[in-house]
Every structure is written in C-alpha cells, then in structure tokens.
Image (cartoon, rainbow, N blue to C red; front, side, top):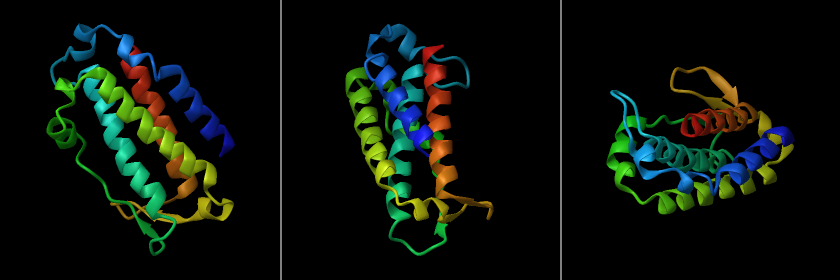
Length: 146
C-alpha cells in the first residue's frame, strides 16, 4: 500500500504545476469521439470526487460496501470542463487528490480487506480499489502529457 501512496504523491508532485503550462490550444483540442486534454483532467476531477466518497464511506457504511458507478461522459459534459479555466480546474484536481492521500494514509490495515461489491456483482477489496485508482490516475495523466 505504501508503494501506491508513494506513486500517487509523485504523480501529484510531478504534475500539479504542469497542466497549466500546456498551450490552451493543445489543452482544448478535440479529436472525433475523444475528450480534449482539459476534459480528461475534468474526468480525473470527477473520478476524485467519487473515489473520495468511496474511500470515506467504506469506513462507516454497512459491509460489504456497494460500489456505485457514475456516468463519466455525462459528468464531463455537465461540468463543462472544456470551458473551465485551467488553473481553477488544476487546483480542484489537486485539492481533491490531496484529501484522498490523507485518507489513504490513515486507512487501518484491516480496512484494506473490506469487501466491495461492484455493479456486475463481482467482489474486490479496498486495497484493490486504492491501487486501481492510482493506476487510473497515471493512465490519464499519461494521456494528457502525450
């Protein structure tokens, strides 16, 4: 778990100032059927919001915890990330993820085994959800940086 948290902190430290240095034309460019780099960052904000709730709720709600999916495309569109100022979007992304790191660092070792039921009824645990979140974040940061 410490490796995932360390990697997560590195991703934040390496990228927290980077996004606002990208040329706005490149940030907002869309290819057919794809999000712009700015919208990908907005998707990471939505992901952070939902996972912050998950990482928090699992500690006090009935177990096994039921994972609630969200409509990623609708959220990116409804939140209008394409027209949001990049520094504001970046700050939102950074603040949410700093809070997630605080929660991850305080997770009790036993809680890592808490069971989570996904919408398809498959079962994972909190440790997997945390690791998967960091990998998801890294994947999309790489998309933005490419």
